[in-house]
Length: 178
Image (cartoon, rainbow, N blue to C red; front, top):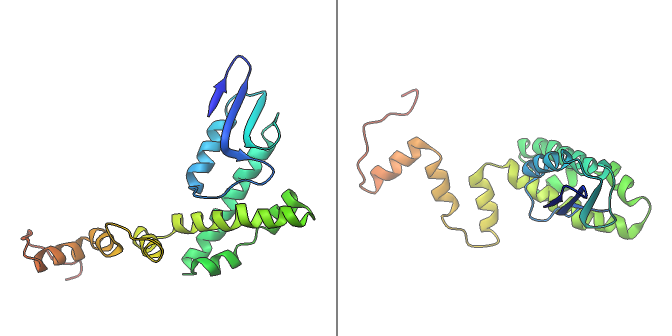
């Protein structure tokens, strides 16, 4: 981010891209917060990472609105235990697609390829428990420490049992309800 206070020019990099934002490799919750911070600048001109110069906060707010809606819909899907592909099918961003792409077939395809598919994936990973996210990633790339280590370290009873099983002494313990 670059801020030129005398000129009141704010350059956002790829945090703001128009007309179709890039959802790749993002962290939706943090992105919303960062856009809140950007909106507080008293800019006259916003220079997006790609697209036309902007003189208001309308597109920035649209991106935030889309991010909030994605997070809301994905949270429901995660709670229902849907996998990524089922989540992608369940999330309906057609109203946003219409606003951004209109009837332009190329923009519609880019909306799905550059925005919907990657942002739903990011929100889905963000909404999962960490070990489940690592299990998903392990299907594609080696991850160290692996998901088993993460699961054990997130459950104190399992962690103590594991340590005792490999001969590492721990203080006396009992599971709740024992």
